[in-house]
Amino acid sequence: MLTDFYGNQLTTSTGLARDSYDIGLRAFLSANYGAQEAFSQAIEADPNFILAYLGVARALMSSGQIADAKTALGKARNLLEGTTDREKSHFLCCELLLSGEAKKARMAVQNHVSEWPRDAMIAQMSTSVFGLIGFSGEIGRENDLLEYTAKLLPEYGEDWWMMSMHAISLCETGQTLKSMQLMEKALNLNPRNANAAHFFAHILYEENEVSAGRDYLAAWMPNYDRRSLLHGHLSWHQALWALYDGDESAMWEIVDASVSNEKGSSLPINALTDTASIYYRAELAGYNVSAERWLKLSKYAAEKFPTMGQSFVDIHAALAHAMAGNEEYLSKLIEGNSGFAGDIVPAVAKAWGAISENKWDKAKEELETASSEFERFGGSRAQRDLLEFTYVNVLLRTGNKANAQKILLERRPVFYEKAPIEAISGS
Ligand SMILES: [Fe+2]
Image (cartoon, rainbow, N blue to C red):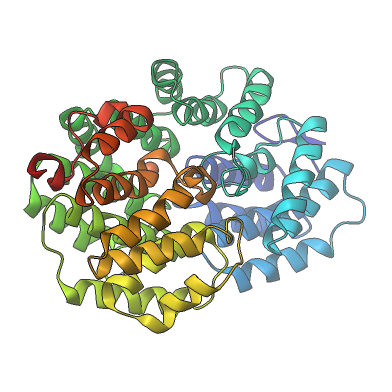
């Protein structure tokens, strides 16, 4: 029996199928374009190779092609007989993930990795900030993620992927020095791992190293295929640093070329959340964002996410709808309660509505309720700064400067002196 890159046995005896699978696996784990093509080549080499179909399904899922992913999963289902227990369990995890059964999927992944820790395609499902733990909606999910990767790390030895995943967990629990040391090791082993480059950028963000961050991504990005998963989001990081640097024209150039849905290649979840985030962070910093931009974004949000359910998306959609005056869609998010943090989305949605009308006291009231649970919305700390800085801005505008400073000091001390909020210097 052949084995994959991580030493897991595969139900195929075709060397070319295995080799193509490994190429797909590495492309997938490093967030580089080409995973789907490589997994498809593995199927061509061996049409009975179940994990290649599941690889295709995962690659399609991660590029937002859910119907096609389900077709690939269906083909895998027909090949279950005669496969190993690991492959059967691998299938189950993919099936649960694809059917949106997040809690069951997380449990299945946990069971799977306790038996087959080096099945990286499955271990991956619960890693990083957009995974099953990141989007659990639970308080303490950042520590849960750290615990999860800490347990897996020793199973992987000198492996670029696992090191980068644990470094992400360290970064998001405030351990930036340890994170940087491990991420540098991971990047030395595979400099083109976009997940590592991404969170290397996060480490620099957490240290508020604006010039170093801009230089780092300016050097890294030109060789990153625009069709790859993180191209748009890494561009958001570049735009954000341009904003922090007061380089408004560079910010808009990057947003329009690579972050927003119009010319960028991001999945809808990133196109919407990153664009809404940079627009409002630009407003916080004192830049003007046109009504037309907000209208277009609200329209895009309504088209791609017509119903409530993905809380991280929902708080960003609510922002776009509020700023565009789209009452119909904003009210859905104010009145609803679905999704992993669906109980606290309405407070944030109401706050955005109040902010759009300059009703700062009302916004303060709503954000106070949700502020102790912002972690539950998912995403990275850098992404969550949209909410942190908005809350600080609301406090400043309601005459609570001392409280605003206290909040920054307690929650985002690195930005205490330099938060990119115009009202700080004016108040
Ligand atoms: Fe990021």
